[in-house]
Image 1: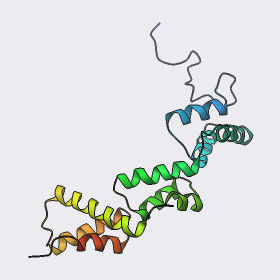
Image 2: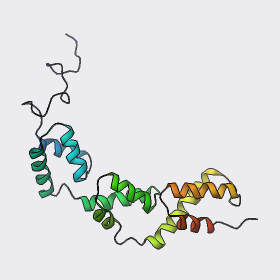
Image 3: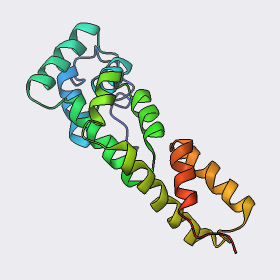
Image 4: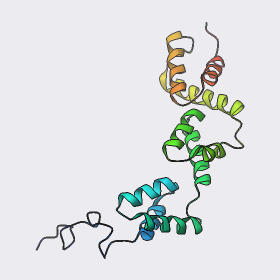
Length: 174
């Protein structure tokens, strides 16, 4: 008999419902998901509910994970902010991304505590701009190129004033 990679029942473990006896419990599934990467409370609860676990089991698993220190939305929001900044995204885009990931406004504000947006955002925008210019090879004095870079910086989540400040730091036109 050839191996098909399927279980004897012909159904994969994902195809089985959460109510089947041999399936994982909500707690085991939460631990498995958290062992791969950190999740926000909202993200983890959605994944457990999508796998068919009832609300009580999800709440119990979430409480256990939080009690054990496996769920910390505040710390996770700070890590996400730092990671996205390292990738060259501005505060506006980061705030939007964090909100989409299910963080509440207080957690998002907490992720930016200790961050001096007034000085650091303009400097980050300039670093992102100069890196982009090195790869683009366009004349920094060209008006169309400056407009394109302005749009690029705004799309990366930098404010208009930070984008303009970064562009104004470029060498003057000839």
